[in-house]
Length: 288
Length: 334
Image (cartoon, rainbow over the protein chains, first blue to last red):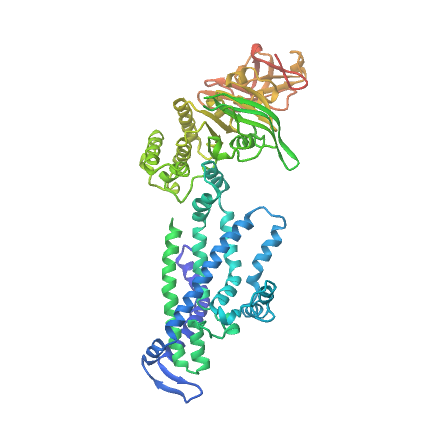
């Protein structure tokens, strides 16, 4: 790519992809921005003209807004905590020489291939159903009163379902990271007198820190948009209304496109704040 | 103290026996080098002593105490690995202090010991750096520093110089020898490089396929190799071996003569041959001479410069008193 000619040729050849990507991103963004400044009620009069920042003020001052932000953060934080902790443990376990290692690894990765809607339905009906669910049978077997998971512990249930889906991803990335650890380092620390827990804390965990930040970053971006799991289980009731779900309700259930679009812009801002924080952490980690 | 005895130890990996029953005694303060071609079991032997591998049978005694079942950290040995195995996320100071920290020493005692070790190894200016910011030789010294602070009964070195370039290797060789003179601690050093073995060792253990071929001082091995393998392995360039008519005159199956014990002449001598490649090093000249009835060219070392060219006819005369004779079993006939 040294000459002027080859550089401009490269630009021309890249142009279609760039234009497509820009359009892909910019058209929905512009439409969201456009609608967010309008009073637009499809079933109650349609386009009712410009309203300035009215939608933005109404969205934030609604009593549902702050609880939904809180719910979003609890779900994201809870899933991250569970997937990273269990992911590290599973990665260490799967790194051990094991009979049938290949099959076990495929089994561990399998949940990632199940669609969110399907897995949420399976969890809801097969595990968490208070009458027929496996958990209910288990509870009854021990003589306990079955838990009504989705109404008694709705947030925890959703965190559990989403964690189950994302655990394979975390495990996979952490496993590859653990496999790249120089075994001589572990042997050296063993000779230096470090017991297993100290070896984990001083050698393995620092080695994994980069992989963990990457897992946290990627998962956060996807977890902020969790929707299907809530839609098929609690439908946003019992305090499981996340920001994403609130926007959905505003647009489709209240048929208020303008208000929902304003919420969408808030969601974009929130995601970007998180992303900036994470980029800085990752950047720091990738430097060293 | 650092007296290590191996008594009839064996090691199997699955069905493969890599170390057949083996006895060895290493005295306090000795610099012992395990040398042999790759795959001869020398690193395995070192790892058995370190405790990183379990022996299949036999006993390891360290300072009179049976250490066979003792975990590596409790054996009082320190090891320097081929890859150095420094902890990349810790500073040099923390790396060196790690064994002390694990032993539960307080901060002040740790710092005092680290500073002392850093002074010996010329690392004082680098204590706050990370291993990734150091050169190969400095990393090597950090690894040694981490071993020194533990004040071990013996140091174990697993091919520590193989990742360094040639010039640095000579330097580090000297530094490790110097360190041994200062500390007077037992050191066990594994290498495949017979030059390292010859220059550093008090005692060389030559291994082949897990078997000890010979144990002795460097010059013992040079002058009186027990068999053909040791004769060929020790000494650089390699000893020349001749069979058939050349050997029968000496009442042996094979005779061996080192390159430095052959005289070259352009007019007369015992064997006549044709010069192949000649390597001029200034101080020495290595000639590769093809002689009749021998497949491998004979290597000859002459001191100084010598005026022969590719294709010249020359005559070689071995120094009769320096010829090694080997019998049918490849054992040396004294």
